[in-house]
Image (cartoon, rainbow, N blue to C red; front, side, top):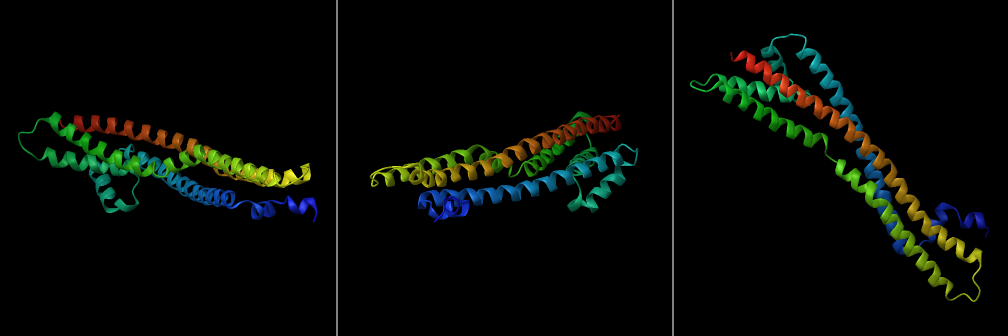
Length: 225
């Protein structure tokens, strides 16, 4: 049996102890889930950015607000977050404006509360699964390190029955233990990079949503005069 074959990744995984194999399997599952959420979140954030830019162009082109509202209502399931925020605010504004003996300030405040509630729901949807990526990035290296420590302990326990320890007898046990750390890093690094990127993109979208709510509130306030 040659050393190259003994120290191949596949062979090391098969020869690892049951605890280390369980750690590797857990990290592999977490890594696959992480990559799934990374691709899904990348698609979702990209679509949201495109829809936001499209609605901003339509809104600031000077079109009629009623037409924009009807368009948002008719295509609600395909609308972006900013469009749904607009719909919620304009719907509440129209409803409160039709009530008699209601102070204009209360009408604007009601529209703002409606937009803020929709904003929170949209942000919750955009930020979904980010916590999983953050947890994967922070915990996976330690889980892999646990597998490594356990594997090294297992290797040294095996050496206690050997009269003379050599590098050839120690290397396979230590190498298979280090595979757990490598898998942990493989799971953690993409998750950390993706989390930082998506957090940045979502924060930028949140800033655009908040700016829109303030500007739209000012437009509604002018209509009350």
